[in-house]
Image (tube, rainbow, N blue to C red; front, side, top):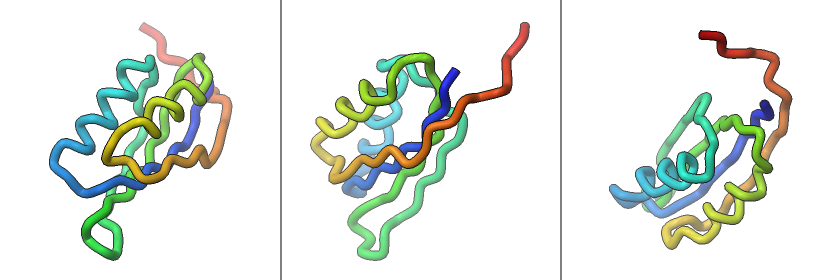
Amino acid sequence: MMQHQVAVQARFNPETLERVLRVVRHRGFQICAMNMEAAADAQNINIELTVASPRPVELLFSQLTKLVDVARVEIQQRTTSSQQIRA
């Protein structure tokens, strides 16, 4: 399974994070790590996600850029996950 680091810059609204997480889930990506902080201007937030999926990250990228509150999306890194989850 491929892991991708995605950076999202968006407006600071209460529903923005919820919309981003919903798109990630609906596109079939699993969140491995997440960090969010307010930008210097206090009107925007920076969200850094590490997501995993066998699906191409471009699917997630194209959907995130369509969100109204999202100003910028950047795919920072692609790695292959060596961890396997066993039941």
